[in-house]
Each structure stands twice: as structure tokens, then as C-alpha cells.
Image 1 (cartoon, helix red, strand yellow):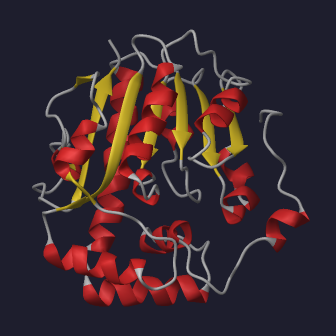
Image 2: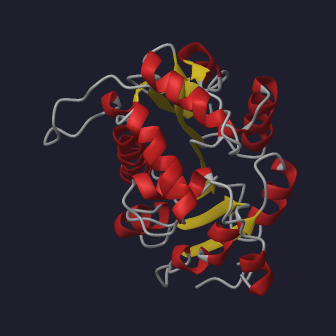
Length: 271
């Protein structure tokens, strides 16, 4: 276990607001996790009552990320990951997938939710050959993220930046693109960007459920058009099949037939 983790003490627990639903905890609930509160379950159930397909989106997103990581380690030779917007620990976390293939892989997780911080050590069990670290920072602070991550990662070596269902929490689209630009500028040629987010223009029922959630008092999550998500990869070399509904990104042959859902993602290489 790395020494670079911010240790979760009593203050971290005191900051957890159990009166307001939180997206990380609701997502954990949809994934079948236990790290949530009644307010999160109520919000999650209200959402699924309108749009049951959100559970498919959550689980398809997780499977997309696992396939991305597997490709990056097995075929692209990546041995460093910067995972921003980690969320609560579940099965098949980035370090578990990557280090199972290449034990020497190094991973930095970034999140600023106090409950994620309280559970951070579940993310930090590393192989002896590799390393994992947790940074308590907001996605809106890319320079701070880079400075802290540099304690564990060597930014002269190719690194994969993961932004999974986090950019929707950045209200201003231009700011979301600027965050990517800042983070990717610090990474060398041969690095990769993995993004997946909820998409608008695919499923009106999903959009209505998300709009209602955004008005509930919880932190809003902004769905973006497929063109907007695709533009996150400007200046990079998109891998086939491009930006697609996440079940269609290099599906495993043993899986059921992939479906079109309102969650798009892609993977691109920095030239």
C-alpha cells in the first residue's frame, strides 16, 4: 500500500451529508453496492421508477471501462493510470483489472467526495510490484490533480487518463473541455484518454428522468450530445469504433448482443 494516500480521519466522516442524495452513492446503489444511505436509495428508486434502464447504463459503463483498461494494459502497453472521478469502490476497480494483467502498473485515483475518501483504502491494495494512490481533489482543479499525481506517476511515461461519468458534473461544457486539455497536455505522446458519459439525443425517457433528478436538489449531471462527447477527443487519434454507445465499444463475443443506450464513450491516443 502506498504512503501517498490522504488518510481518512474523523473529519472525513463528519462532512458526509446523509440528508441529500449523492450521485456517487446512487451509482453505487445501481451497481449493487452497499455504500449508500436511505436518501440515496430513495433517489435511485425514484429514478428507476421513471427509467429502469439506468441500471443497464451504470453496469454497461463499468463493463466499458474494464474493456478499455484491458486493452490499454494488454495491447497498448500502458502501465500508468490517472482515474479522475473514481467513485465508490466496487468490483473490478481500475487497479484490480490492470494489475491482474501487469502487476507493476501504477494507479492514481482522484475524487473529492468525503464518503469515497472514507473508503479510499479499499482502492489502495496494490501488488508489491505496482502502486496505488488516492488524491482528494475536485475535477475542477486539474493543476492540483497533476501536482499530487506526480508523486506516484512518472509523467515522462505514457499514461492513461480516465474520465468516467465525471464530466457531466462540470456544468460549463467549455470548462469540461479545458480540463481535458490541461490534463492531457501534461501527458507525453503515446498516452491515452478514456471518456464515457451520459448522452442526450438517444433516449427521451432517460433525458426526462435525468432532468427531473437535476431538479431534485442533488448535484446536477448534464447529459451531452454525441458530438459534444466526440469533441472531447479533438487532437487525439480515436481508436475504432470511435465514440459509440458503450456496449458497442469492442464488445466481448461471449456477451449478449449489445444495445444502443444513452451512454457514449471512446478511447483515443495522444500522437
